[in-house]
Image 1 (cartoon, rainbow, N blue to C red):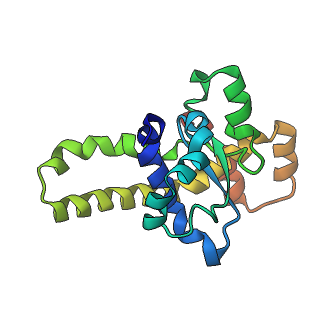
Image 2: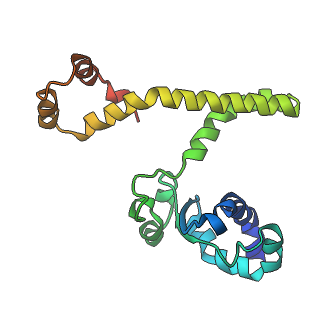
Length: 189
């Protein structure tokens, strides 16, 4: 094994294991992969697969030869730290079909979950998994509850005042007008 292979083996295996079930009969033709250093990782991905065919085929039979097209990008949070050429080639805003993606969602979730680290470290494995799952469920519930208000604020910010005026002149229900008018978008990201 060469040093290039060893430095990205965990990412290669994570990519293969997460997408393998969608290849083959399900016919996944392409997918998007966002990674902080996707520009470096993707350069040798297919070569590493071919060079280590026996290992990867033993874990994921047929994945190497039938691997779908992969669009690799770097998340928006990490993009400013990359070179100009890299920003032009790997910016997710320039990848067809991925322009409105953020690309760093997992990091935001784990940043919130780091708060529970000290308490779950003392738990047994079953309790730890249950506690982490409850925290993820809570985040998903909060996201579902807040999505309406976030969407309303996004629309309000997008439209100009004249568009807002023409919307309200269409006589939507008064409750919608009130919610629209009192939306405080300054507190939302």
